[in-house]
Length: 223
Image (cartoon, rainbow, N blue to C red; front, side):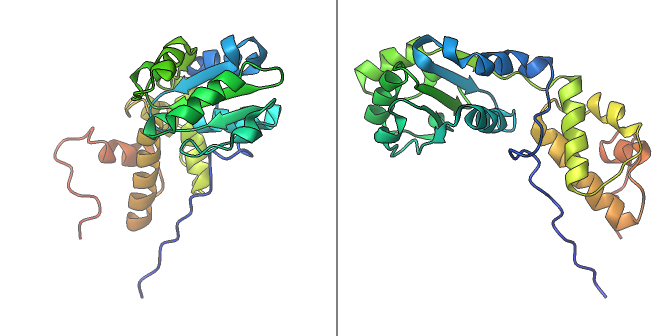
């Protein structure tokens, strides 16, 4: 009888899950904590997918009671005199609305947090007034995760899949996988898949085989 695999992922980077803090995101956390000092009331967080932008934005929205707005059709009335968040701005936005939101952010009680994968100077727009506004925006780049953050993320991903790996696997993986959240998720998924298929515990030896640290390893799932 074939046993069905269940998708055991639980939402790791939800608001109820603590953000993994470390030197690589210290600047971003500090700027968000001191949002009253933002020039013009605006700040851009940018970095690659999975760098923690959305989690930081959700945490900030909880602290400030900010509302999330649609970048393509934001309700400007909801941005008057209160903090707002717009995510993935570089994936598409309404230029005139963004121009007005940037202006509104400087009013008392307001604020505008934007997230993107690229810095604001690279966002495409033909609205001249908006171009100058984008060039003046303050921004923080989220660096690749440091050792502390990467290990914390790995632990969260293992927990999300109900896995309890051997302790020595964490320093081993931190020193060998790409320094990205996506790489951390991939290796946890692969370890879960292979360990389940072979009915083996999740150990450093298994991780070593998956990462190809041993030459001429066959496909671990091959029959």
